[in-house]
Amino acid sequence: MIVSKIKNDLMKFGLTQYEIKAYIALISHGRLSAKEICQVANLPYSKIHEILNRLERKGWIEIEIGRPTYYYPKPPKEVIEATKAKIIEDIQSIANRLIDELQPIFEERGIKEKPDIWILGSTTEKPAMKI
Image 1 (tube, rainbow, N blue to C red):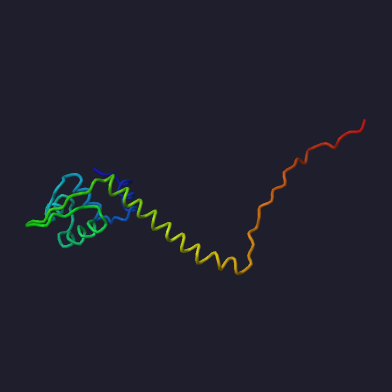
Image 2: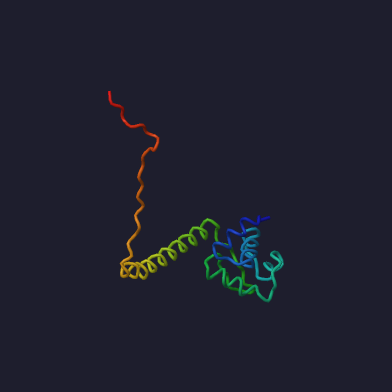
């Protein structure tokens, strides 16, 4: 049984609850038809093809067209690394776009960064004594 922490982590990687159930059914049982996935994962049959198509577009499963069509999971290590790389690439692209758009506005206004100045010293020091 997959613990809730793993399911939450998979959601952070962009999977929905239904996609998680379908993928876990596939990694637990191997090659399955849509009907078998519904039975194993307790998913509504009316939604299964939409769920499986999304998983395939996201790169988490492979499809073997036939009668019936079968679905295979891609290895978790492979899909998680590929998804991680895509997330990092997307975040870097967003960060670059934001910096390109916002930094000129910041600089136009003449706003200066406020430097932090630290003055270190002791207030308990005794003055030097004369001899």
